[in-house]
Length: 253
Image (cartoon, rainbow, N blue to C red):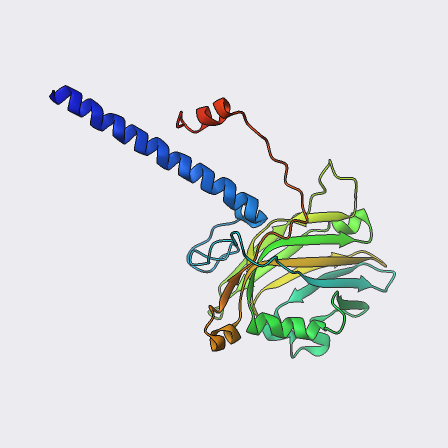
């Protein structure tokens, strides 16, 4: 009887283990469907000082969240020479800098009529956000694959940098469009730098996966809000038969 009891207990433990495994597999699949940035190019760093939103950042948006709307900025080089290190952001410094830190011969135009780049800089101070997806549309293929230099720092002087490398999907027909799935926090210290070829332009779409707006607290709402996948990049899904799916889940039914 003792052997039978032990066998029954072990069987229950095995079933519970498989059931938990199945739960996490299903949860991961659902999260991947809801927002691209969940399985994107994250980089882990210590504490809250990181490109991926930090250990304390809320989870990406789930079902029912409003669709993410992008901040759209076009950088245009009107000169016949290449212009290096065109910085977007760095709001704490560039709000008061001459020309808001924009290089001579380059113009920054917001994609939404009636808005200005200076307003975008102020938004970084009042409504910091986690960038879940960056969509790049260059005037030429060579401009679209220009690397971007991402830099984040804090008031203590800690600095971390990362090079973002756009890669055109070999299966896509467009040669001037790239989607970057690197996740990073964007506040007044954050900056993104890109080189512009001669007479070239590039439009960048920054899709927030979440943002913070203290004004929401005045109406009793949470100051943090998560956003859903904008669905501008198609995700291919592989459909498995029940037998294969069960085998991958460890035999759970």
